Amino acid sequence: MVLALGTALRALAMLGYRPALWFPDTYTYVVTVFKPRPDLVRPAGYSMFLKLLEPFHGFGVVAAAQHLLGLAAGVLVYRVARRAPRWAATLATVPVLLDAYQVELEHLLVSDTLFMFLVVAAVALGRAERRGAVVAVGLLLAAATLTRTVGQPLIVLFAAWFVLRRRVGLAGVLLAAALVPVVAYGAWFYATYQRVGLVGANGAFLYARTMSFADCARMDPPPDLKVLCDPRPPERRPPSQEYIWAKDSPLVKLPGITFTKENDDLAGRFAALAITRQPLDYAASVLAELGRTFTWSRPVYPDPEIYGYYEFPVTEPGPPGRYPARVGAEYAKLYEQGAIGTKIVEPYAGWLRAYQSMARLPGPVLLGVLLLPPVAAVARRRRGRRPAGAPAWLVPWSAAIVLLATPAAAAEFDYRYVLPAVPLACLAAALSIGPNVLRQSGSNRRAKEFGDDIPPNVRL
Image 1 (cartoon, rainbow, N blue to C red):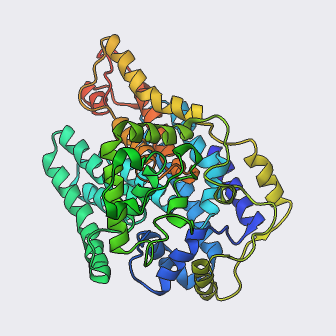
Image 2 (image 1 turned 180 degrees about the horizontal axis):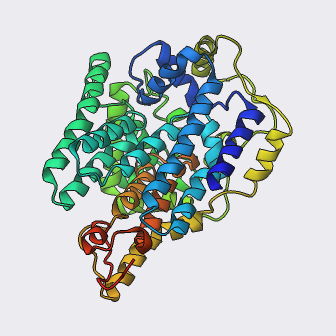
Image 3 (image 1 turned 120 degrees about the vertical axis):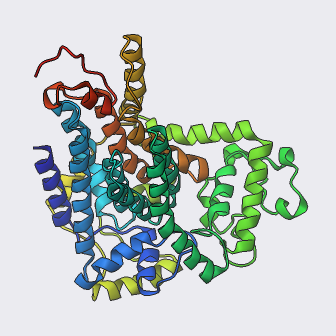
């Protein structure tokens, strides 16, 4: 029933907003489709996804494919969570299948839905013991990393999971499978820009993150870094992203484009100095950004323009304004082989807007979902039920924490960064409830495999 309702919502999105919804990043991805080269800001994984669908010459096909990925992610969550009671497995799928903002994100031409599916698929295979399945996990994590760089720490997390289970050989297999594609992409990036890495904007984004607290009077930066100082007090400064894109940003006013090696290195040095000289301020700033994830309301942030992209629009969006987007729009017309834009069709669009005003996962509920696994584990220990080995919820729970914390630490909070972590958090919560005794074999060996003990006197 939940899957059917989720499918109906996605059908409404396809009917109400034709063929898809656009985001500023979309145009950069489309340019990479026709001019294959690594981008300095975003890895090319999503562009390769668009390239696979290019023969259909329709962004509607891309939106439909992303909706199918969203449904598939829900099915995977249910399949893995069936180790828990059926009601818990079903409940775990509700945010990914029925959250209006999840449906809207799938209809946006951005990388997050593809990234979410790749990570959920990796988690679904994460408990495998066969080498072939572990290789698949590594390749999925590599694809996720090349779709969004926040996937990098997940490779380490999964390798640590196999080490924790005393499967060091499988950890090596996973690392090899994941790192070969990543290193190959890094070699392509180096050949293009003579720079090491997957993107060339890490220093710039970390600089922007530190500008929420950086105080040059306390930092005492060397002369070459003082050019990046902002004399305004932190409470009067704009959101972090403005220090990357706004024309009056000290970084943007430097000679050359923002993401040259010289500018990015300079920004990285400034950020490192700010963090080492003001570690408590940095920690407080990260916690403040992370705290935005768990607010009950959905306040406008970081600005009305970006916030508006995550709402189903009332009026049809206008043509792209900024110069790079206008260039990308010409390539988008070539991709579509016709005019581009979004046509709003009523009453379907109105139904979705009304649904979006009511159906979402509030921040405090997500916080409760994240707290459930460790609280349940502590409760089991107090009752003397110690799990034999690592609990099944540990990987999806840790992955959700990483996906929520990394943007807050390295860039800034964004509502669309939260959604890929939600299915993992819900899966972890379902698994923490414990296996469904009625659907497991009667042996303790089977129960311990999933991290919970079933008393030997239980009969099916």
